[in-house]
Length: 181
Ligand code: NI
Image 1: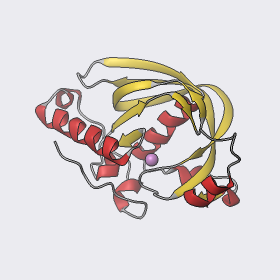
Image 2: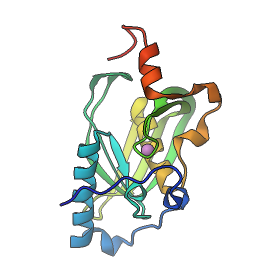
Image 3: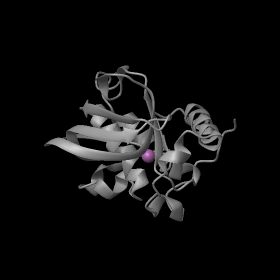
């Protein structure tokens, strides 16, 4: 296993549409190694999600792991480490909420982004089996952020009010004591 460099906004791979992975290629030694490397890279970076394009692999693969519990996003439900190949996202309820998003490929910044808060994800797991997840609230935002990476999009594309794109250290300095963690 190895930790891969995470590419940053400005690298052209982050703006490509990632290629679907052929089902026959999912349950392979090559993919298992790539997934193990992505998990190690995610843990090293301290993130909650990583898409393959962020390590310069433009394929439809993302991993998400949300520890849950109290956080700067409020009390959140956990998602155990989940591997998504070729995910298709369907909005179940279009009602939106906003969160201050960050991204390992946009280090040091935060932006306030509105997204639908009730979605379904159809995908293939690491064994190549069909799977479905229905997610609400913050977790719905997390999957939309990660799957945007597979479509060549970044969270900054969704910011409606550019005064709400800020440096993380300034953002943290402005939080009132009871509004975080
Ligand atoms: Ni990201």
